Length: 161
Image (spheres, rainbow, N blue to C red):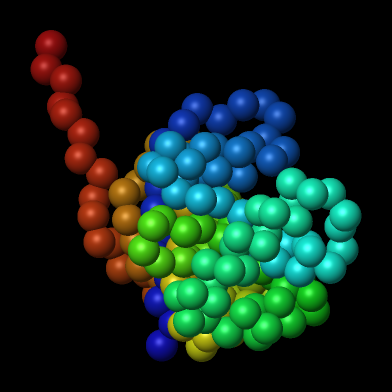
């Protein structure tokens, strides 16, 4: 059974939403003190000559090998698959992938398959949804069956007039 944690981030949505979810999720992760890399770019040292990009992804691969992950399997998955999550996150103890979505977007079939492959490799995957009004704070989604379980509900104060 492949379970994915869904977290909600409440923001007002702009008219032009292109890249908005990725920008908000990346800022939120970096604000928490996490190191963030693009998820599908683990093979970047092979494809670029920019020194800053090389250093950043060399550090990522070094940390992955220190933690005991199969780096070559991850690079192979990045090279051949278009459903990789948006970000690879390191929060000082563990690695996990994060897929950023807007409130109305769903996971595609290729993304679901990729999430299953990543969990087989032992890496946790989360989905962070940016929405105008959050229905809850955290859900757990079974990728195979599509069943959702609410972990934490949104708590709001009732205004009394």
